Length: 545
Image (cartoon, rainbow, N blue to C red; front, side, top):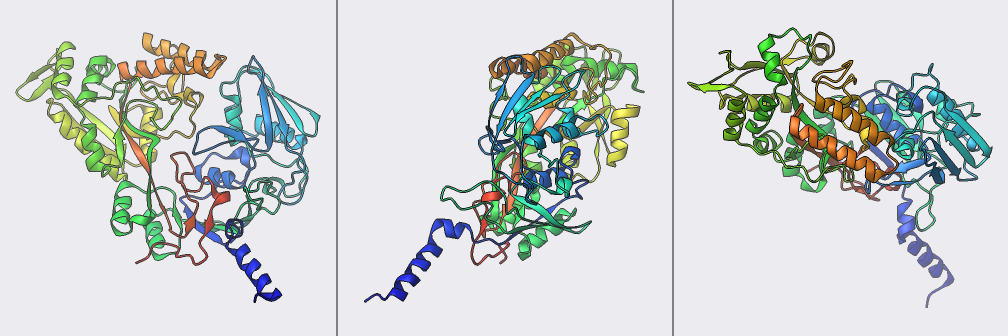
């Protein structure tokens, strides 16, 4: 016989075991940032640490789903972009409140855009919206509608709002009042941040339970990656957002259940030659570096498979070009993968007038082919790659001198003195859209690294890239934009101004106590879905043996 008390007990137990109840188990997630956030103001973010805090705390009008790479509604239920791509109209969710209880309306979006686009603010996020001379106009015809107009067309306009954390126009807490899943409750500089669940967060799961599931996230500031790994092994941390290949392999061998390879990432490693006309280099070297056959020969002589296997323990793939295959829409799948072939390399060099004699390569004037390859000191992977490239090119009779510099000195040479021959470095891609690479591909761009800030394009192919990048930025459809940018990728593959080497895998560590983790290649890789992460009832934080 089941008594009334037994029925009550049964129902309570059933409720505790149901998915929705388990989902609300709460708890505190622990992981590290590798640097100090410079700001909590969402419009001033320009460093990785601050960006990750903004991601966890900031409410945005539209959110790029890091798994599907598609744009989804956020604070806005829908939006419409005008045919001239200068105006976007958002329809907002009603009844929302900031973390401090302040109501949310179109007025807050207007206030945020004013802060974002104010020249005195110097917002890095705002730079992406600066389409031309003139001011941005924001209209709020009602509390749930906002209309934003720009001086000129902006490609991928709606996707840019993924980076715009909406601020309150009225809260006394200013930028600390947020619309995201968590808010900053405590901050001790140089030590830690404590994020707490936003009690006013608007999202719910399929069962109607409020999100996020977690009560808190404690984020320690720890620059030393080795210490971070030790703490994870000891059970003090539950996530490591990025591991290098060597750390990942050691952890995988000891505790495979906690290691996750999310696949090929967006970030490449590349080599380029200095083509700046005013560089303090001998004229014959400048002539080498400007020669397409020379650059293509160097590319053909580098064994990328060996770089992936030896330097990255297999957790990398040979790079096709400026866009990783992980960028599902914009990658040009028609590009041919670079192939290692020293005979092809020598044939290209011979076509350009170089001579291979007595295991030494000389140009047509008799100058031995020798150059310095600079990279940043302390980066073990790049130092290993530079040494392997040195060995590969010696097979062509080329002498490569590897020079490691501290990062400030390297940047000084790259951007001011131009006193270097060739450089090995990585380019970090924080956005999928090609518009984010304008400063790299426009010949006038500061990050057009082989020959930056040109007054006019130095070559016909650079002029073609200039035109294509501008055309894709104003093309009316994504299909037309992609066709233009596919051609840019093809030209880059033909000319090799950057010799792309490898695309690194995204390697993370996640404790078995974390439920719902699904690491991806886009930042933040291991906690992009923090609002739906939860902890097992009896967590073992690391996977300590």
